Length: 229
Image (spheres, rainbow, N blue to C red):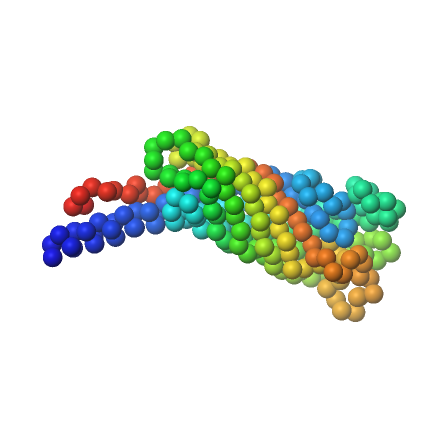
């Protein structure tokens, strides 16, 4: 019975230690928008994006992740390859705040307590929501509605991360956000009385991209496999 108790306590100790392996840091990079106004290049950052990231490394192969990122989405028809958009000449800008929760999966084991330099590609997905100001186009001019909305979406991120110095992890990633909204660029007015100002393809929702660097600090107790501990 005593040996069984020791084994159970050892398992709980290991689990508890792993559950405290945390990462906290920041993201900095750029954003670009893909919708009914502006260019449609998928990776073409044109505005600063920055924010904070937290990860709970649940195992060597997956982490739960949360982030808050701020940016300004900007689109200019004159930057497009579409002659019709160039001729139209619309442009917009909208400040956003994105909150995202999800899971990060690594291609290789990423053991933060191995004591060795480690690196791996990774994928991240989950759910996101971005707060943005509502506006529409009146005679070709961006016109605010003085309201804001939340655009829910799905983040699809591909990245590469590596241990850097001591407890510092550095990464680079490119992430698309598919949203369930067509209103981020003002092509779909929020006010129902202004639906006559709707423009673009009503069957395509908006996308936006974040591309940049992550820098996180990892902390938490090392797991101990000592017999009888």
